[in-house]
Length: 79
Image 1 (cartoon, one colour):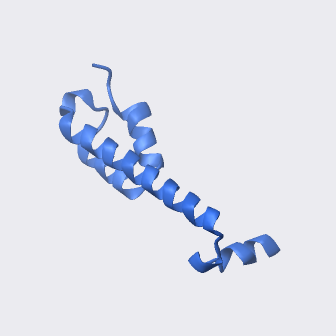
Image 2 (cartoon, helix red, strand yellow):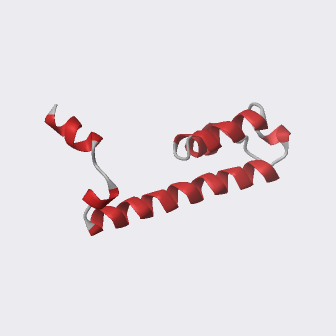
Image 3 (cartoon, rainbow, N blue to C red):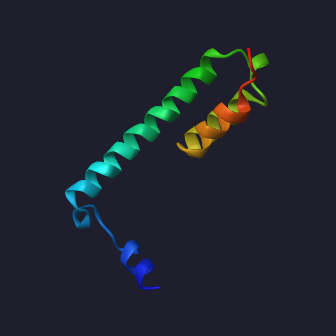
């Protein structure tokens, strides 16, 4: 579709100032969410984590939005 063609070739310079700011804010929030999840995982004993900690660390690092979300919703056992 025409929309797909426009979005595929979109570059940083094509974004408006508002679009650039929104993207930067989204990236910073997503990265801080992932860092928070990694820090929690590192401090939490393995007995309080569902599954292997190494697997969760890879998932968090591999997808900065879905990985931390899944970890906080499913990966942690209640204390």
